[in-house]
Length: 438
Ligand code: GLU
Ligand code: MG
Image 1 (cartoon, rainbow, N blue to C red):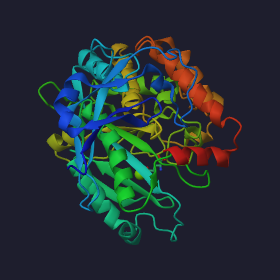
Image 2 (cartoon, rainbow, N blue to C red):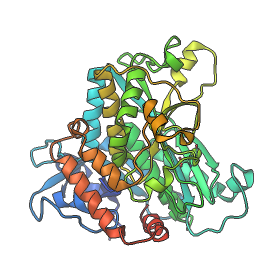
Image 3 (cartoon, rainbow, N blue to C red):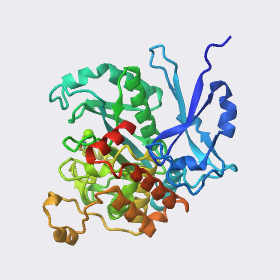
């Protein structure tokens, strides 16, 4: 008699940035890859606090969550616990058409637009910061060997887990904040960039659990400390695989695709930030002097800029062309990687379509400028609350037009439902509520 039947969890990363889904026996994998698992439209209104925001779908409708075998993660931590198995997937209607609120399909559409208008594909990676929960800091330890050693066992499980999850491993370090660490992975192509981010968050949580620990990716735990950023690195490849992000003759090295793309991201940043930094506490992190992002500016190696051109470590042009990339810093892990990346790519594509001129690199502390001086230079202070960010999103017709018809209203209704849960809480209680979730 069997004592245990291995299960596979089919998952979506939803509007709340939560990985949700259903499990089925591994023995039924072939048929589940063909027919998926049933899904319910109103699930999209389940906020991160497990409260259901007013749903336009009510009790009606049926969808399918179709696991994608390419994303299969099979994780054996070697501690005798069951193998962790999951797959990410797309949500379709019963005829197989992408559902308007499927975050992964939304990203696929954005990537198709990038190929159409820019003639390039995406090569990128998400960089994540996170903190161990409930652990008193053992003195200042930023970047220290001791801080690293305290978590070496966890980190080695994490690296093995990422490899088993199909990610290219890169670095792990003790970040600057209390009990804060950072993990990076190597770049991937297209939708896999965001798949990797979802897998990395879940594998990090699993690795911690297998070490009887718990981690949080919450945007900020306490305004006395630093935040947990998600920095999204982007670069472009031409159809034949040639790196297309850098041009030695371009402004700050930006190619003819990169310059208008970044200009588009900066132009629309205040209207897409509701999708990249989507929690009530995200805006506590996005304040000056936290090395996050407070204005829609481009920096050259400047960690206070919302878009930063990253350093390269060579003077060989072929190597520079491969290494040159830029990062979007106004994101956090409350966002589904699919939605955050889709919003950035659409904004960039709009910049390419509109032939926006190359943005200038800022070289000063923008928080020292008066609102008039900022406006004269074309900068805006980014929204300072989720409420404000949602209003900028829903009132920007261009931005809403990038998404499937039903999506903008569903998104804002979901997020307002989430806000209703925390509206009466003070800052400390709000931070605690989000820390419990992410
Ligand atoms: N913790 C910072 C943030 O919230 C980033 C620090 C860094 O540049 O690594 O984005
Ligand atoms: Mg960092």
